[in-house]
Every structure is written in structure tokens, then in C-alpha cells.
Length: 174
Length: 143
Image (cartoon, rainbow over all chains, first blue to last red; front, side, top):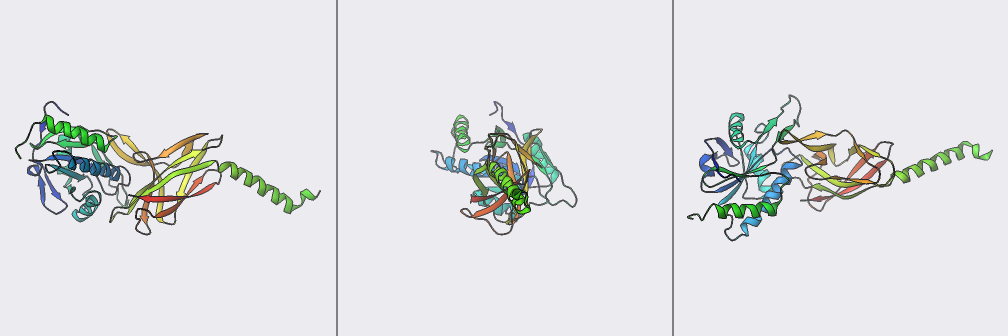
């Protein structure tokens, strides 16, 4: 959690339903952002499964999850098409969004969040290595970078910490 | 001497090999599971706890399965604030110690499953250790 949340600036992605996903889509909701790629057998499915459980616990909380969204940002637009992303994120939680953009836009938002990633595209290599931060970023309903959850992640802890952050942020006119 | 007869000599060496294998069988595997494949995905990972109950180091050198196109030993590693995967050509198990293959660490990277894997299915993967021990292990598919 940051004492002075940092307002994010414009970026342009596309979601798994081919709709524009830009700064306006972060407004009015708490957004959990996770960078990854679908050709990732270990850390991405592990994290998405944890986030699905965190989502469940927020759904069951007093305030609920109506003002919460989970966004999987693929840093591998070369392989992750909209339909592939949709299939992938829905497997973990049907409410999850999958988004991606071109390298400039990915670098833009990743840079604003301090989220490091590296895609080592190698000609002729089908399963090229991708490195990405395993942290989960929380953006508040005013589209400000509010907090980061560093690995190792725990669903219950994310849920609990989020409830505290949401309360501290004050009651919202809903 | 009758014991010098080639058949007996062969039998003795076979028994010696069997004894070695029995000691090698001091490698056990528990909690072996494979993550169910999300739809459209051609890769997943396998996990387990390897236990070396022998008094010597044991080295896992390969894994194979008829259920996948390739099986590779991988490790998720941290690099400059990022997480990525690295191929681990061999993994040493210390004497009388266990080594977990768990999310975020060592795992078997399973590429192109021959059939869609659903939770509850079983898939066999054979682990190969230095010295020739092969250990077929049944992995449970879990979501």
C-alpha cells in the first residue's frame, strides 16, 4: 500500500472480447492486475488459481465484489490472441478479463507500475522464454496504483488485505 | 568350479544388479500430480515430492511419458524482479533428503498432451536417474 497512490496515465489495450481496454476501464472499480502469458505452465496458472480464490472470498465479503475486477495482462501478444486469452482466463474464473496490446503499450503500463518483463522471442523456437513479474498490482477506483501484492501469494491474505484497503479508502457512493 | 559357469555368473551379476536396484528403490515419490490443462493450452506442469532414502546422492537426469510430446525438467526462477523458467538438465537429491517439485519452483514441463487431461485422470511419467534406475510414477490430474 502506498501513502500517496500514483495516478496512472493513458494506455491502450484490447480485451478478450476485442473491446478497447484503456484507462477509463480502470475507473470506478478496484482492479487486480497480473502480467503473464498463456504458454506458462507453472507460475501463471498458479497465480490465476490463487486470484480466483481471492475473488471468491471478496464475493463473500460484506461489501462484495461488484466494484472489483481481475485483469490478466498478456505480455506475449505474439501468441496470445483475444480468443485464446478469453478461453484461458475464463477457465480460472468467468469474470476474469484477459487483455493485451502492442509492445509499446505493454511497456507503457508495465513501466507505470514498475512491472518488469522480458519476452525473448527466438526465431524458429516455439516455446521462447518469457520473464515477468509475479506480483499482483492493485489499482483503485480512481485509476491510481494503490498497492502491490508480492509473491508468495495467498488467496486469503489477498482477500483480507484488500478488505482493509477498501475500508481505509472510505465509503464509496455506489 | 560350478559357480564359474556362465549361467551362474550371469545369475550372480543379475542378483547383484537387483540388489543395487533395490537400494535405488530407496527413491520414492509422493503427492504426484499434474495440473489440468486449461482449454486450448498445449502445456501444463507436473509436481511431486521426491525422497531419497538412500545414503548416497541420487541424480534425476530425465523424465518421459507417452502421454506428452515432451517432458522437461524445469525450474521457475527469479531474475531481476521477474520470474521465468529455466531448464534443469539434472537435479541432485541429497542423501536421506526430500526435494519438492512445487508451483513456483521445480516442475516437470509437459508439452503437447496426447489427450485432454481432466481432473481425476491419471497419467504415467517415468523418471530416470543416473545409474540407470527408472521409476514409473502415476500422477493424478488436479484442477
